[in-house]
Length: 91
Ligand SMILES: [Zn+2]
Image (cartoon, rainbow, N blue to C red; front, side, top):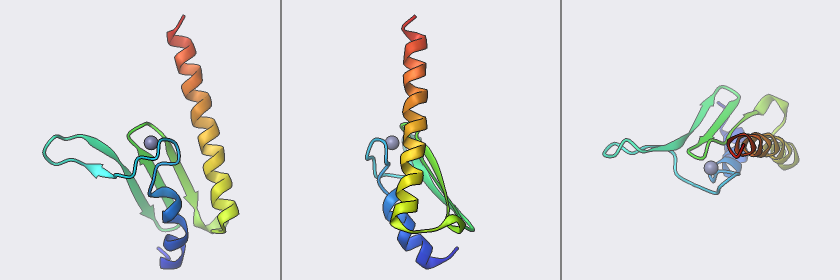
């Protein structure tokens, strides 16, 4: 992990880009799942309890523009999926 990359990328992922939830981990007492932020070499994986997940590959660039566009694409996909799901259940 590159500390500079982490400093650039983590501010975009601390708060869930979908719902704004800022907690990660699992509550020891209640077992409640909050979400995860995993860093594996250059891959930054953020998952949230709302179901949103995004992976940022630091090798593909760490500029604000690149990170934001990746998050936007992931958000768009996620919202399409959620819409498709709710349309199915309403049948
Ligand atoms: Zn979320």
